[in-house]
Image (cartoon, rainbow, N blue to C red; front, side):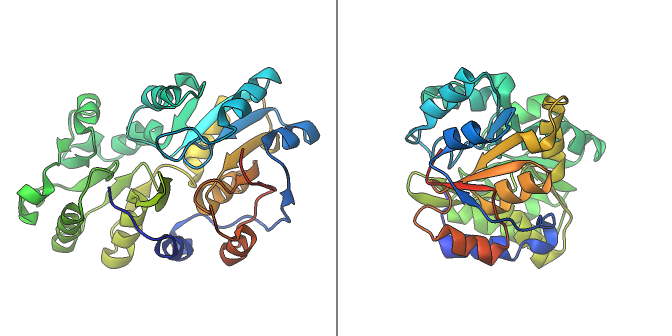
Length: 305
């Protein structure tokens, strides 16, 4: 697992403006006790939950997460998990949440991985492309034109010269040596990337991980490559979310998230309302100061869900 300190991750996000969607107009956040208070006082038809930082930060469910899901169901509201966790298909994400005691169905999960078929169709179904993932064979079985790229440190960077581009699904399994080799591959021959997970960082069991979004932004800055981001905060995924609720106006959808540059930016940019929880990426930070630095402001602010 590759990790980084908060300030490094935050600086990467702050410098991502030219490649991320434009920020929505600022609002003044209302401090609330949690999700239930918003649902009691506002006209919300469906609740959209982030996973990491909202429901859990790795091994265990966060306090109140199980109860919040049960409360949404008790109120008869619709529910969706919108996540940049793309290691597994939505059914696998739901299974992981169930292992943590969280009642989420596979059909309630939407992720950047859902957009991969369209992205690959635009590049000849991935012919001549390589896929980098913890579980690459799952993806190669669905997209057989892709070539599996693994054991990076066992090969020289030239071993991948024939590939036209890379689908970078995740890098959680990498060591620092793997990262060095990947950077050497792009230095040697810059090529486009498809990245289903645009996260720069993720809170995980007390650490902050280095995520594919950080590598994609570095590739754009350092090598000028074309990077196609699929997940939050980019509009296509929020469009897919809205397709799940065609009868619900965007302002009646409430996104609950923990990252300004994915959850606030993507949700409010798409017309949704946003409840920001301080249990994830900004845990221990001055949230209002970070909102001011990023010029990204949620509608509501709470310590946790």
